[in-house]
Length: 236
Image (cartoon, rainbow, N blue to C red; front, side, top):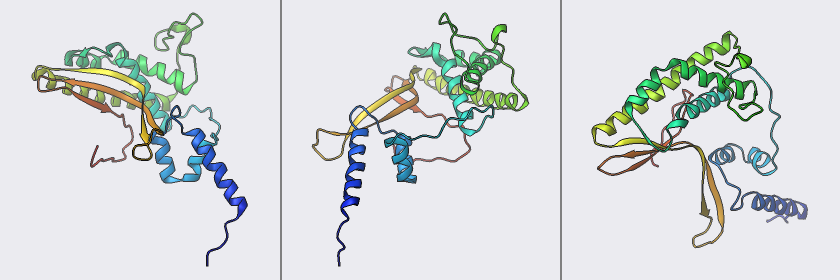
């Protein structure tokens, strides 16, 4: 026997659906992180991405796993920023991988801004250099120094991998070029075939590369990973 639907439950369901439609329109994107959260826990997805409830951000000087990744991403972005939009030679990448002083300076800035919540620019709008500016000298404790050393090794490893790719392309008569870093990309995904409305899917891509060669250009999506969790993808 089918039980009658409770009117109160119907009203609640309609309210939830209304909030979902308001949240996920053509201007509000559904990110991969949001989709992963929904797959793990739909209730957490609703609280976080629809109701907008998020835990208060703790101010901590500990470098946990999420902060480790943030520091790596930020330092990589700063190191590659001058090279975006133009061919990146393997010789340039080799020099960059060996420039420990520059890598450490960029890491110090990443620590200052992300871990200690210090400003990135001064009152005049100039970038603050927490690696060389005596007025903004950054002091790290022992644990933070160890983490900086480990992240620096990760950075050198990434630059070396990019250098090998650039060298391979150069041997073919091509080159490596960074198209963008940490930029937002979106696309409208129709929920039904032929529908004019849908859900905006998108998010921030760590890095987008152009692999140019006489045989044809390719686009490479780079997603930095700093954990030891094995991740595989059978298809694109």
